[in-house]
Image (cartoon, rainbow, N blue to C red):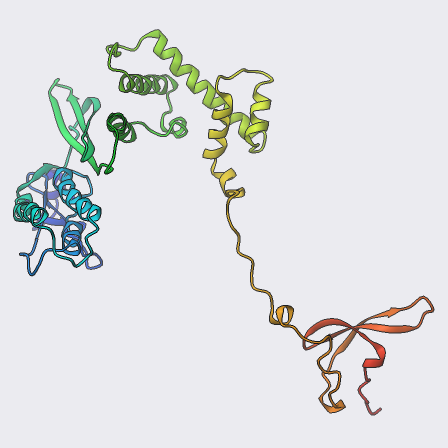
Length: 376
């Protein structure tokens, strides 16, 4: 699908203002987004049915599950519904039990305003045609009821025009009992999870080492500014910040290279080999991290706490019985078998043989065997 006029002009009978449903199919029951190709915007399609019967926890959960919000832009609305569900769980309300009057009033007010979400419209394209500078700005906040974060993308084109668009958001319900210091920590962690890339994937993401060095420096600056309230860093990168970024990249490169050179050695051997040439601060933790992140090592050595279930033993191994159940049967009911091996004694006489029978391979005395008569 495209709304580019250069493409649409080449298609006969095209519909430049067509509206398409995104994320809606016969296989899913969740309502999808609506893409208006003319203004290139995304809208929500919330078809909430009027309430019938008593409002219950089951119906609230069913209503919330119908809201399809892959980008998290409706987080403030969905969060209110999740807070109501959290209250019901705290009161131990069953699935089909009627709601208390205060919670019912709160849910009724929210339910009546859900159709207003159909008027929400967001721009689909967040980048300009020829951006000269692209920045990500993260904001977060938290309270005793919930916490969330949103990411804005800021673009500057060749004409120095600035465009800012909301890229994505995320919200969560807070724990019922959360200390105030944990609230501030969750604000920092929520933004960090959206912006900071996996450091072991950075080497494959950038072909220019100088650019990678500066990216790591900005990530370290963001980490420092998130953990302090005073003396926050700003402006161009300093020499000290670039040196810290370079040292971090050297540590990661050394560890990863040495781990592969030693044929995916464990943390102890990896750290011992590195300490013959370098002394890495907090090297033990870094060595454990490298081995833990290695996919090959993870596949070849599963966790030690894995409980492997032993297969059931065959019935004849667990059923109590006499050594030879056919001891007193008449000859016509004796089982057939094949002699596999002879076991002569010290005098050369064979008194015991190995026989394969219906019940498996076992040793029998010769006096318990009978040769099948065969006419010649």
